[in-house]
Amino acid sequence: MPTITFGGIGSGIDTESIISGLVNASKGPLNRVQEQGQATQSAISSMSDIGNLLSKFKDAVQALDSVQEVGSFSATSSDKSVVASAAGGAAPGSFEVEVTQLASAYKSYSDVLAITAPGQALEKSGTLSLTIGDKTVDLAIDGDDTLDQVMQKINTSGLRVSASSFFDGTGYRLQLRGLDSGDDNNVNVVETGTNFGFTKTENLKSTGQDAIAFIDGFKVTSKTNQITGAIAGVTLALTAETEAGKPTSVSVASDSAGFQTKLKTLVDSYNAVVNKIHTEAGFGSVKASNAQLRGDSTLRGITSSLSNTLTQTVGDGKFTTLRSIGLELNNNGTLKLNTSTLEKALAEDPSAVTRVLAGDDDQTQGLADKLSTLATDLLSAKGSLQARKDGLTARQKLLTDRADAEQRRLDRMEEALRKQFTQMDQAVSAAKAQGNSL
Image (cartoon, rainbow, N blue to C red; front, top):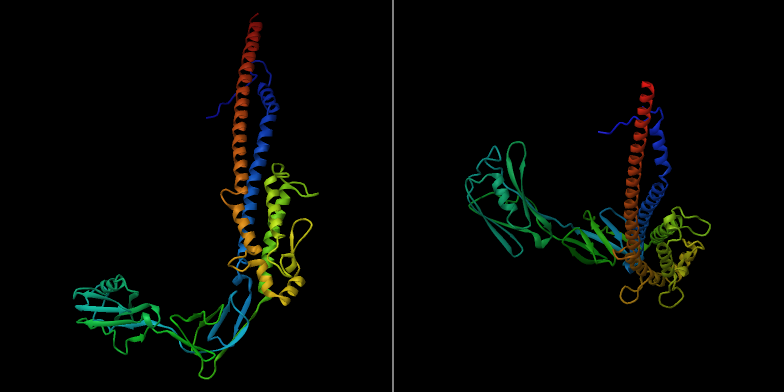
């Protein structure tokens, strides 16, 4: 409960205003420490922001640090029965694709069960044997097992199968389903005494089978409805069988627009880092927005390391630098993409453009690899960015401790002044009382 003080009652002097004024006049050191603490906290937040921007830059360069990622291609299909998509390892070409069979997983139903509720005993006893490939599980079914209990036995069998119930409005059936498609994942069912009826033709809805397609007349099979590896860098998603004699045409072409988009992302993320550092630490005529980071050596080191890496050379030949393929440094340290230079380089030697960014993936590092390594080092727990944040955090704690000490000093000062003025007030009051008595 706060103490309410009424000063100056005996003397008539507003002592509380005097005390408040004296204490406020002594707050200069506290105010300076608090201002420094606020600036330090702002600097810590700024360093975190720069770290987040560096992380985005790292993602951008890692999207260009392999041969497959640098090469940009697009794949198109003439019919929705085949959906084609291309990655970096693709090459221009055209193919005729005929889909004669889609992949499927095993699915079958039991006969209608002689129950009116799932909790009733099925009154089926015997052995339900399930086989996938070379693995067989024999499930013992008891006469008093309910539908839910049989489902649990199947679902916990360890095989890639699943059981569920189906109610058509009049009766219950047990659904048995394989969890994987393909010939090797077909489910073979043998019933001894149970007579669920899974093997009846009318109850069998699908078997496990491979997808079959002919690409330019060559047969290709897949356990799923996705075909990868047949056409380098291209994935074919099969959605329907094609009409006999009418194959789907798949075309793969270079996608320079996609490549430029990746480079634009790199440029934008790089510039975000540089501009943030310039704003916080100052650059040229731009004043630092935070006095704690003015001309900060750590931030200067980051921009210097980035620009030095950007200007390195890779291999030999006509295109060996980022500038030679259209990524140019401005005078203020930011980066720009010269699309005309890039398009010219791609037209002359696309593999050399790839080599500048991604190297050869085996022995020579590209500049995207080097930038990725640099960003990783800067962001690591032992990197310069974290070390600077740790230093600022330690300073922030020191300033907080100093502010607390200053506040305690002011509190003691206020207490001492109040005691002095109280004593004075009491003395004046006593003198007045003595005067009145005379």
